[in-house]
Image 1 (cartoon, rainbow, N blue to C red):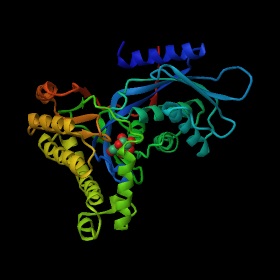
Image 2 (image 1 turned 135 degrees about the vertical axis):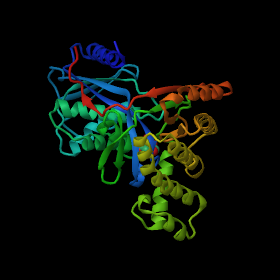
Image 3 (image 1 turned 90 degrees about the horizontal axis):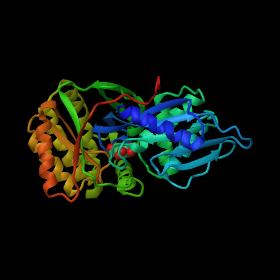
Length: 392
Ligand code: GLA
């Protein structure tokens, strides 16, 4: 059995154990790694994530035959097999914890959008590392949204699935995240990164040159997005946008950043500068990715890391050290930077496939004096959320 088959088998067994029946279908939604455009999605900017070959699987089937109000039932295999159920014939209340709120929030958002979700039962299992900055939450939310779409024959677009999963995070879980992760999970193309305009949701796949490998190095340092400095960063960006009189920091350019600074304090100025500089790197990284240009990636990703660490202040000293060691080992073969929201999580390296040994050596050096060992793994750029066509 391969990785996905094992995951499907787990979801199927979980469904049987929870409901005493076989599921009628399976759907999958991937996690993502972001290559460039960090903390710019909620500033209406451009991002370049790609889906990874780690995913959430939902096994689904019809509701219990029992009389009573129509229920939506869910079982989360990776949350100690916790169960949840809620009625669909009235307002949907918040649940007792995060995973329940992802499910309830998705169903609530779809219903509010005029999409009628039928009573159903789902069992959810995944292998996206949780809390690592690889968007296990977005994979979870998009998977639940697509399960609703499939079972209730709603034919929802990737954009609608992504918006519902984001609304669940924003309104039910309490994290003011942007739309990047959910769109990467919903709309990616295998072998490509996704160049996404977070203002319009227009997107296009950008090919990843076959000479390049995407290596994710997990520091093992974990963070909770909710209640972390994430919401604070977003508020700082919005305050900076108000200062400059723009709808979002995406609308600011270098000249305005300096000329209209006025009395803007150092912190807000630095946050705005990160967004402006990061947005200027998105197209060049997309070009370097498509062209297999390791040397360009080395420079661009080093600048991106510096900006995240210094201007946006979302790195940690061990992550700076790991990114620097990997960048040094790669030389002109590629680049490395912190990926995801920060405050822990992963470093991503985009580099020539022949540089694997250099990355491994850099990680081994880091691990010699790290409290937690980091682990490197190459991910293939997967495709976005989809029903699983045939399960034997
Ligand atoms: C988290 C959020 C995204 C995005 C990134 C930072 O993953 O969910 O919306 O803001 O952080 O780029």
